[in-house]
Amino acid sequence: MGSKTETREDDGLLRDCWYFAGLSRDIRAGGLVHRSIAGEPLVLGRDETGAPFALRDICPHRAAPLSAGRMLDHDGAATVECPYHGWRFRARDGVCAHIPSLVQGQDFEASRIRARRYPAVEQGGLVWAFIPADPRFTGEPDHAPPRFAAQEKTGDQPKLVLKRIFDCHVDHAVVGLMDPAHGPFVHRQWWWRSAHSLHDKAKAFEPREYGFAMAEHKPSSNSYAYRLLGGAPTTEIVFRLPGVRTETIRNARHTVLGFTAVTPLDAQTTEITQVFFWDAPILSLIWPFAWLGGKAFLDQDGSMVDLQQQGLKHDPNLMLIPDADMQAIWYQRLKKEWAASRAEGRAFANPVQPVTLRWRS
Image (cartoon, rainbow, N blue to C red; front, side, top):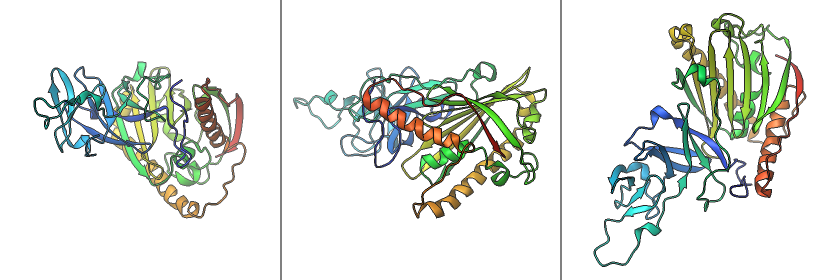
């Protein structure tokens, strides 16, 4: 079942789970990339086979960041060389392969030293890193990162990528992401919503792997942007722990996959990454406008998060109401069950039940 104690009481971040670590195209052979995920410093790169790897971005010798070093071949194996004293660590497992300062006759086995390894997987143009709760964890995860069936149509080459840092705990970013009632107030655009576009909504929800889904349905009549795809599009929105949201929009001919990763850099900072895949030629023609629209959405959400922090610093009691806030309630229940199932060494039991939720937005 992996390691125990899934969350740390001091930061509320999930562990023993897969986090989005980056796009495949950003992790190049021979290069090193620094990432911070759930408070863990990682260095990402590619080993001798071209597969991605992730090591702790701290040299065990004198704590210099390995990402400031370089990739070198050592006896046929890709290694990361520390910039401070040249110690080399095998990319695939973190084992120390070379210590330049040792002289002949000194009885010291370099392979006893390791840089902590994090399992890494690449699929669909995305790279995932597994962040274990136990720092002694050296095995393989007991579950896989998500796969997206829509990529069978869209392919795995991102057409549009947007990023923004939110100065908040990941919980507030996730809850904001799945909040269905803020659109007409935070995201007022002529091509999306207006102040007078409030409509009654009724959507069917169902449990999915480590999360839930708003089942496939016709987009709301006040969501104008969906019309760009033409035909009679449908949309399905899925959320999965620890913070992955996908929206699959399709008509008879074309498919759009919107992937959003909410990644805690630490307990106070969260990175939002939005990646869009599609096979619709019209979207490829207007992608600059799509980029501007997506950026406007992220900027609006970021500005609201900044406003929210003014109130949160006073540690108020927060209120959640049915049905508009039910997804936020599910998120907290999912987190609690995730932590309990890992600590108790049992299978995850999804607390979400099929239901139709109703709200006005």
